[in-house]
Amino acid sequence: MKKYIFIVFSYFLITSLQAQERHEYEITIAGFSIGEMTATKTEEGDTTTYLLTSKVSLWLFGQINIDYVTDVKYVGNRFIRSTVASQTNRGNFLSRIWLEDEFYQVDAKSYKYEIETVIRENIDYSAVRLFFEEPIGRRRMIAENYGVFGSIKALGSSEYETLANENKNKYTYINGKLDRAVMHSPIKNYIIKRK
Picture 1 (cartoon, helix red, strand yellow):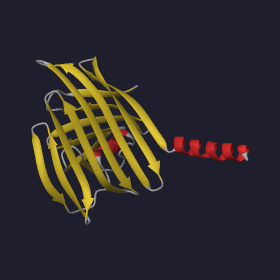
Picture 2: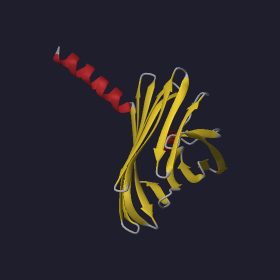
Picture 3: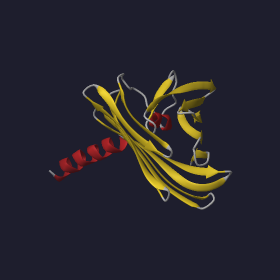
């Protein structure tokens, strides 16, 4: 009986480990490290959850500390909801998108930006997925923090540029996985590099 329990436990442990993908990144400005990011993808049945967490601390006319969390859920290939929360010593912000009665409700508040609206079309790709897969053949995404659609443009071999709410970001992939991203920010542009 103990052997059977051990085998079953081992199977579920191995299965759960196989269902999670995790990447670690360093965040830099002008070559100086200002923080770290962790990207985690968890699959359970037909549900996929993406989680980005980062902590940043930098000096820019005063100390700036930012804790940033993006939490996104899909069922199959359909976007179900997202929450983007940032806690800073300059204010806290929360952006949410959620599916309700076949329409997406948007309540987005980020630094110097707010919008409340309804999206009446299906969402099958969002910005968080850029941290887990090369967007081959994709031309558009929902930007979770802004609650608007943005474009994805292939620049060449495994390089892509996104544009959402006038913010341009550039992503570079190696073997289909994100290696480096140059991110536009209203505070200061920064680089995310896989460790």
